[in-house]
Image 1 (cartoon, rainbow, N blue to C red):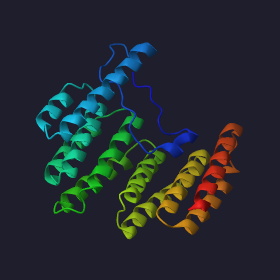
Image 2 (image 1 turned 90 degrees about the vertical axis):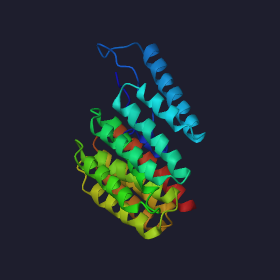
Image 3 (image 1 turned 135 degrees about the vertical axis):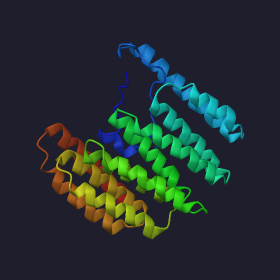
Image 4 (image 1 turned 90 degrees about the horizontal axis):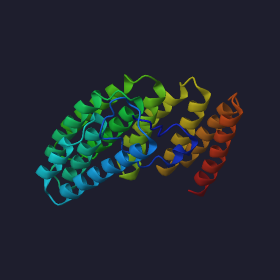
Length: 257
C-alpha cells in the first residue's frame, strides 16, 4: 500500500520538507487503485493539518485523540512529532520530549525503509530543538536513540540521508556552529564510505550544499570536486547525467553564497 519513493531521485535537492504522508487506512490485499491511494494520502494530510491546528490552539487532548484514529505507525509517529513541535514552541519541552519518546517507539515498528528514515529524521530534528532547554539530557538521549536506530537500517545511505536532514535542520535553526559542523563532519565521513557511486555522488553534493549554507563555502567547493570525480565513475548513463546536472546547479548555488 505504501508506494512512496521520496528521497533517492535527483530532485532530492528539494528534500526540505521530509514528510510525504503515507496512507492511514490499511488495504486487505495491499493493492488499491491510484484514486483510492490518493484519497487516503489526502485524508492523512487533513488529519495531520487538524492535529497541528488543535495543538497550535493548545487543545492537545483533541490532537492526541486524532492521532489514535490513524492506523499505521508511520502516520502516527509523524503526527506525534507535529504535536511535539508545538509543545516546544510553547516552551513545554518536557511534554515535547515525552511525545517524541512515543513517536520513537512507533518508528521502531515501521517496516518500510523510506517511511522509517523519514520518521527518524523528523524525531531527531525535533529532539535537537529541545537541546537548549533545561531538558537537554533527555533530548540528547532521544537524539542518540534515534541515531542508533538509523545505524540499524538496511543500508548506509539511509543513515547518511538522516544525518543530512539533521545537519540541514541545524543550519536552519542556527544551531551553534561547532555543533552543526560536528554533525556535518560525521555525515561527510559516512558518505565518503558509500560503495554505490550514484548514492555517494548524490550524498556528497547534498552535503556540500549544507556546508555552504553553514558558511563553509571553501569546504563545500572541495566536497563538490570530490563528488564530481565520483560522478565520472558512474556507469549508468542516465544516473551519470542526472548527477552531473545536479552538480552543475549546486556549483552555481554555492558560488553565489
